[in-house]
Amino acid sequence: MTVAIRRAVIADTEFIAELYADEDVRPWLATVGRYDQESVLADLERFDADPAAGGLILIEVDGESAGVSAWERRSERSRIAHLGGLAIHPDFRGRKISDEAARLLQRLLIVELGFHRLELEIYGFNERAQRHAERAGFVREGVKRKAYRRGDGWVDGVCYALIAEDLESGSDDGEVEPARD
Image (cartoon, rainbow, N blue to C red):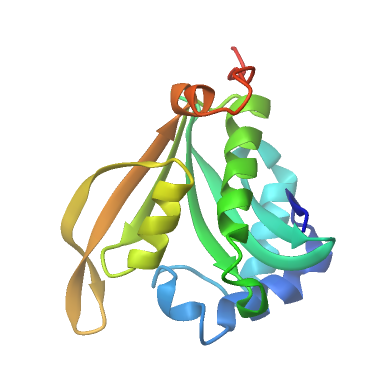
């Protein structure tokens, strides 16, 4: 099984929108996100016009679309990117595809694009996503208590980050170095 990532293109719009709408995916995504086909297309066009601002990343397994993730530049000066919108198609779950895709995305953002810090936030009730973040090398930094209105109540946001030095120290061959300014 070969996991690969690539920048999503307009032709991927339908797959991404259908994945985000899946009843097994949608409950775990941020409530404020826009996940319909028109919004996905708008995001793809926005990132196509300014690739350094972020992107939707298609996750493929043996050349077949299996999932999506997103990243957005949060600070150009401090080289911070925010990650989110990770979704794996139900047909591909249970094989740690998201873990491999996360590692590939970390290397893309830190080694190739020169980011220093990658951040993500997960709803407190989403224990599966928290375990994924930790397996992928992210460090839990804290909890925003009752930060988000969800349904009839408030939920915590659990904050994670990975910095360039974390990736360097966790490499298998010791030869990965973050990109320099």
